[in-house]
Structure formats: structure tokens, C-alpha cells
Length: 473
Image (cartoon, rainbow, N blue to C red; front, side, top):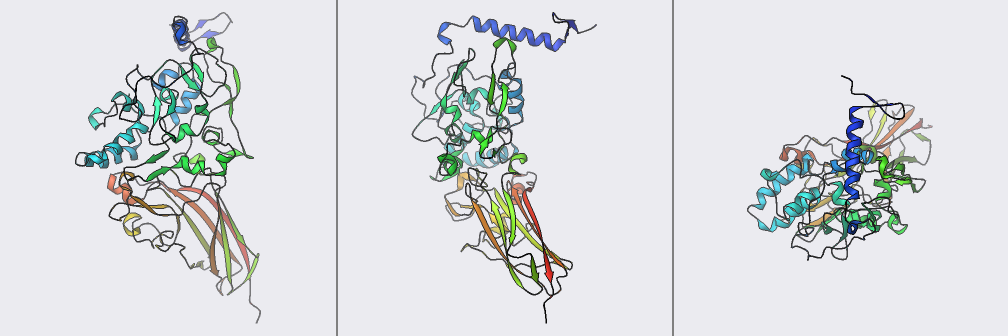
């Protein structure tokens, strides 16, 4: 039996086409029967009920729709979202290991961790959080329909409580109208919200103060203090664009129709926000985020001479620190080598930190945190968080202070200086190589949580060859 049916244009319908058509017709019919009070011109507002003691929860008011529901009309956007870490925020193996293996077991004995546990779910699974009225969850209450940062949730955020966004202080309730970035109303459920175009909506979850009063996640603060914020460049201009970066100082957006439903007459738009949200988990973005360059004052050196080599680490494309986000365990390291025919030339390593946290193997916690497998003498970019006992911790809920932080600042171009003694037997050339790596978490925490080791991602690289002349007697 054939599943093809001839249509009025002389082409053929597949079974999928027919099902989609009936779904669209049903949706349009449902829209036509909506009461006038639900028109697209109704402006969103804060809930009438007072805020709950749990940040983010404001009463039942219906249910948030699953993101799969959005795919009926927004196929392309849904496909992008489905690839994102927002869609996988609750499934993330590292998050789940920290939450279920570390935080919840301790929470049973220490109720000062209640806010920490609730805060994790409030951002990683906000629909679950609101459905459970802010209560903490267990592995038994877990479910595939409860996780992730759903499309409907973000597009129902109408504001945040307090003066600044952060620590999941969102105001979001279910509703038919969806808040979005388009200034004009184009269909029954779209309402313009300026917040959807601003970094503040990101800051709600990408800034967090822990139980010790420490701003343990400060991405929004870092952006706000950068030139990007001063020039009006928003988080969306990088993380919701085609390339994930500014090109010639400007964002490059997708264009087209936001909806693939032909019956809703979605207009062609010059600016469509990409919903993959590339970030630290997306190699396509982090690999191009930083540039390296090797500079030497002269192209020819003399055997036996000491020269200064500068490695330029350029973070000017980034509107926040690198690495950012969960600063307690993420780090970068710079691997610089000089080679001659006879092998690698040893380099003198100097630290600019009294605690020597900026060179691997020299920090007082490195043997336990980085483990013996990590090479010594590499330039590190990281934050050192310590607990109330003064020991380094890789868990945000235990961090009381940040005792060291040399992460690359937003828009920073840093010069690293290496002194190189050219050997007498250097041959004809010296080959200089610089590579910058990103590691999401050290091997020690992987072993503790029973996870695979975090893969080292090469962010940038540079090479240079210097001619060696023989010394004149």
C-alpha cells in the first residue's frame, strides 16, 4: 500500500506530511477558540501571588510545556536547542555525579546545604524545581520528563527578584504567551520582552552566590565589568549567533523564519537567534576563543646566547574570564617548548604568585588536585577555592574564599615571558611551540566521582623557528 497522496500542486504527500498537516490544523483551530483575553497584545506582568520562600517558584498556574511541543512549528530552533547543553543540563554526567554522589548525601546530615541543593536544581532543571515547589529531589524522584532547561521556561521568564540577576532569582510562571526578542507581535503567542535580548536573563543562572556569601559563579559580573557591556554587546551576541564570536566586532546572526508552520505566516527575519548556546562544553567555540602568538626580538640568534621569548595569550574575543563559570575546577594551561635537533631545551620556570599556584607542580595542593600524571612546570590559568579549613575544594558549596585567581580577564591580552638559553650545539634552528589547553575538571575529581577523565581540548597553538648562527671566535 502506498503512503503517497497527490496534492493540489501536482506533488505528493508523504504520511509524515499528512500527520503534520493535521497537527497544524488542530493547533490553528485551538488558537481560534482561545478567549480574547489571551490575545498577543496582552503584556506580561509579575505574578499576583507573593513569591515563595524558594526562589523561582510562584505557585501552580498550569504546567510548562515540554520543548518537544515547540518542535511542531519551530523545527529548526528545536533541533538546535536539542544539541545544546541547556537541553542536557540535568543529564550532564558531571552535574549528576556532584549532585547525587556528593551534595545530597551530605545534605542529609547538614541542612545548611538545603539552599545549595535547591539552587542546583533551580538552574539545571527549573521545571522540575517549580513542579516540586522548590523541594530538593532524590534519585527516586528523577525522571526524563523533568530535566533540562526547557524552551517554555526561558520564554516565560518575565523578570527577576531583587536589583541584580543571579542565584536563580527568576520570575517565571506557565502561560500561553511566550516572551521573545521580536519587537512586533507576529502570531497568537508571541509577546515582546526586552529582557529576552539582554544579558540579564543569562545572569539569572550564570551568576551565583553560595552559602558562604562567595560569588562562586561570576560570568555575568565579569561581562558587566568588561568593555563588551560598556559597548552594549550582550551575551546573546556571541552565544546565540552563527559563529559564536563577533566578526569584525559585530555579531553574525542567522536569518529566515522563526516558525516553519506555513499557516501562521511567520515573516522572514534578518535576525534569528541560534539556540545551540555554544560555551565551555562546545569545542567549536572554545577552540576559537583565544589566540596565541610567539614573538622574539630577532630572527637569528647566536649559539650560547640567552634570549627572551614572549607568548601572547589573546582573550580579546571573550566578554568574560577564561575559564569562566564553575571556577572551582576548570582551568587552562599553556605548554611552551623549545626544541633543537638534540631534543627539548629545558626552560627556567618562574612564578608570579607567592603561593606559586600559577605553575603546575608548585602549588601546595597540586599533588592531590592535579595528581602525579599532570606535567610539572606548565603555566596555569585558574582560581583556587578553599573551604573553611583552608583546603582547596572542587565543590562550589564548600568554597569559602578564592585565594588565587589568575584567569584571563575579559578582553585581556596577556604576555608570558620565557627566558631561553640557546645551547652551543643548537644546530641551525630552534623550533618554538606554544599550545593552550582547556580542561573541564582535573583527574582527581574524575576518580572521586567515578567519571571518565576530562579530555584536554587544544584551544590555540602557535609555532616559530629561529635561525641559529655560530658564535664568532
